Amino acid sequence: MVVGDVTTGTDVLVIGAGPGGYVAAIRAAQLDLDVTLVERDAYGGTCLNHGCIPSKALISATDLAHRAREGAEMGVHADPTVDMAEMVDWKAEVVDHLTSGVEKLCKGNGVNLIEGTAEFTGEYTARVAHGGEGQGSESIEFEHAVLATGSRPVELPGFAFDGENVLSSRHALALDDVPDRLLVVGAGYIGMELATVFAKAGSAVTVVEALDSALPGYEEDVTRVVRRRAESLGVEFNFGEAAEDWTDDGDGLTVRTESEDGTVAEYAADRVLVAVGREPVTDTAALDAVGVETGENGFVPTDETARTNRDHVFAVGDVAGEPMLAHKGMVEGEVAAEVIAGEPAALDQQAMPAAVFTDPEIGTVGLTEAEAAEVGFDPVVGEMRLRGNGRALTLAESEGFVRVVADADGEFVLGAQIVAPEASELLAEATLAVEMGATLEDVAATVHTHPTLSEAVKEAAANARGEAIHTLNR
Ligand code: FAD
Ligand code: NAD
Image (tube, rainbow, N blue to C red):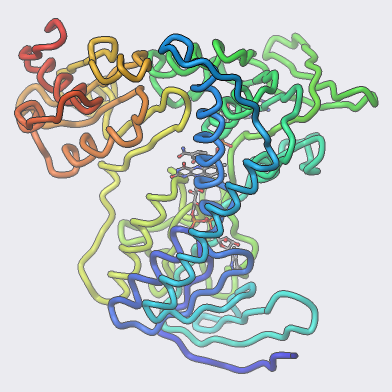
């Protein structure tokens, strides 16, 4: 059936149904606004379809195999094999469950869903081209718009993604076989998470990173724990080397790298995963037509209410800038919807947590000790190492630590750095502490269940006060 060019009106047009867009749409609908959400690919965006969820599914599944293989220490003997095709099918089921859940939540909240690509055609008008030839288009008049078009992987010169030899994370998460030799370019979030997945699945993984450490934005003692664990899985790191080009000699690929001093190195591989960052998607929605400007690195600049340079247009999620994290997009989506509905709302980036789902995981929120000193605090720090935590030992996962940073004066918790199993979960307590302005005493005096990993958070807070029981005070 050919759909004619009809015009409809809506209070809020949301472009993109990733975590930024679908949350904005649902919240706006809850606030009694008429909302139209347009998605050109799949509900849930990168996060649900090609990012957070598929990567965490494969992280869990390959870790299960790894833990079983390593269980001899605990008296468990097993020799599991990884069937990547089955694993990827299981992952697809998880993704389907969640994406159809997003669709149902949108519909259940009264959001009008349209499949197609939305482009602005004027200040208050847009056109949606439905997918596929002859599917037609429709015009939409809106009062407010929320741009949530997300991001895509940066393509390195000489490494065009082909899905066969040179993979983006999206390709890597859909592989139905385990490459014998995987070369990973970039030891950032994606490089480190997926290097761990494929090492646990049985690949020989080599990582090439232009800077001098893995996860360069994090403190050295945090990343050291994760790098060492990856090395113990057989991952080989090559720091200070930028990937330059690759060749296929018919017997496999050869990737050439160059160091700053001009030293050239070559690595053999069967596939190359390039994970050197992501860039905002600003070329799908004809931003010129509505007058929205882009700024540094191509992101759309916004104020603390997620508003762009045009009063009636908001931008949320990856397209609006770093950190490119799903939960950042979600909170921006909520704020944009509430501001459009006339409610007082603003972003508080101070308590924006981040987690890397490596082995062990990393979780951080707020300020490090150095950052706290830099902005004028007199920081006090407390630490609890996991080898003194009963639950960590019973999990045979005792590498890592919890560090809490506070202001010496008021003892307000300013931040936390956690490297531990389930650090992404432990982080919630620290994030709450930073968000609500809790003190070290608040955290240290809270009774934590025993034996749990979370006791390490309590002990780190107590340690900063010189009152820890289960670790020696500094
Ligand atoms: P997206 O999720 O990218 O969604 C944007 C949507 O807009 C897309 O569906 C796209 O099709 C649609 N679109 C674009 N243009 C148009 C148009 N003109 N018309 C209609 N639709 C359009 N973050 C975390 O917090 N935790 C993690 O563990 C995590 N893991 C990740 C793992 C990987 C491998 C990757 C790649 C990313 C990961 N991220 C993670 C980042 C996270 O996926 C993003 O921060 C998040 O998806 C951003 O949400 P968004 O709504 O801004 O954009
Ligand atoms: P990243 O910015 O985290 O890391 C990219 C790395 O590539 C950097 O360390 C950089 O120095 C290196 N690099 C750049 N050019 C290079 C070259 N020529 N040769 C070798 N190394 C090079 O980017 P990413 O890993 O692609 O992830 C993109 C974004 O996706 C992240 O910034 C994050 O926002 C999001 N993400 C989040 C999670 C999570 O929250 N757990 C997981 C995955 C992705």
